[in-house]
Image 1 (tube, rainbow, N blue to C red):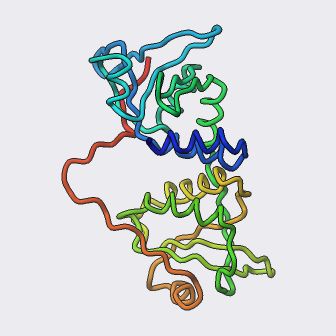
Image 2: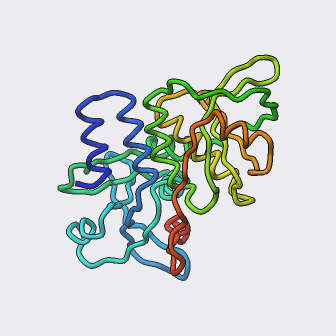
Length: 251
């Protein structure tokens, strides 16, 4: 059983929107092995098949599953989010983990286009001043679960984070997640990851604000006094790191 198997079975068993969204979130984060027909320089050709007039590429979450299906073959390894964007751009669906895996299924072109569009949506940017920081209080379980799944992505790009309540100018209240000493340039990716966590948890985008600050700012001290501190994972050991989000182009 892989995480994709478990997420698919949970969605099938419950039929709830929450579990269906959890499966799509797991698919976006999964490392997938795409079956190829060949390569020409930096361009690859996925192996395609047709069902009811729609074309599908084939990908597996374990290399053993791909080998069991197709034998020795050329492959490309990439993240589910990257694959969704590439397939959507070509109008292709995805044959996932065919044939015997618990998560085996055909995801039609429309579903992959929806996933790509959902992942591509950038969170809105606003400029508001926090006047008061309060303890976070009781938070939705779905939000905590979503953050638990996304915050490991911040390993090595922020020192820590705080989850708290916030009162803005004018009296508006909200929950805020503040990243402290984020690596310059990482802000957009972190904000997008948290936005995805909300979307795939079935929560409204406004359920949590994301902000960035330096440890030397007075607001950081207020967050330390009243907020819930989140210690982010340590960065991965140095050495060769393969980037599954940077595969060759599809054709």
